[in-house]
Amino acid sequence: MYTGPQSTELVKAVDILRTIPTTEVQLVIVSAGFGLLKEDDLVPPYDCSFTSMKIAQVRERSNELGIRSSFNQVLENPFDLIYLALGKRYQIALGTDVFSTTETTTVLFHNLESDKSVRIPCAAAAVKAFSKSRHRIHGVVGFKGDLLRILALYAKSRRSPENELNKWRNPTYLKKLIHCLGGLKQAKG
Image (cartoon, rainbow, N blue to C red; front, side):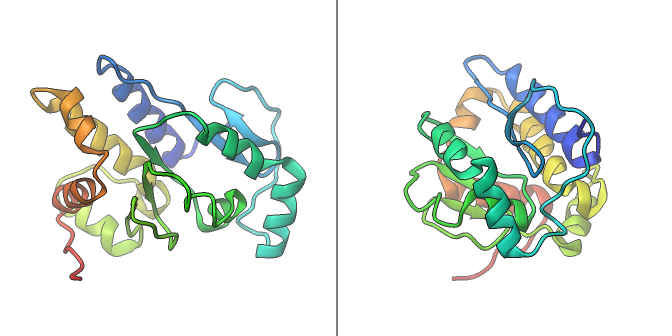
């Protein structure tokens, strides 16, 4: 159902990560039509998106679908990394307080900051920087998927991919790695 560049690149990244021994990856989809979906759930074609909704509508629809409670159940599992390739409205559907209790390093693209979060800009400047660094990027719309693919390929290329993935638990290391791979300027402070 989800065939855009972000989704296809995310699936490629997940497939790459799954080739690394001892690595388990769980892919969960936030759907404005059906709530939280597992990657192998089948859904009929539908036309419902949080993107066009007002924030109050996003919260209401999220509550109707049980997205927050379903995601909290997912977070009960131990993870080394959470990668949220979500637009702002989709992230709001999860709830802004959901990450205040997790100790898991979380990559996100909007302003939900915590000690364990790695906030990555996904605007045109970041896309341009990654393109200039000779990475294949599908524009702003596909960048979140592209970034995970780039990270997965980087890990896979290391002498010990398992050790590289282990380092990603450290948000400072991961942020520096992403900035280095993309030729992004590190924010001071």
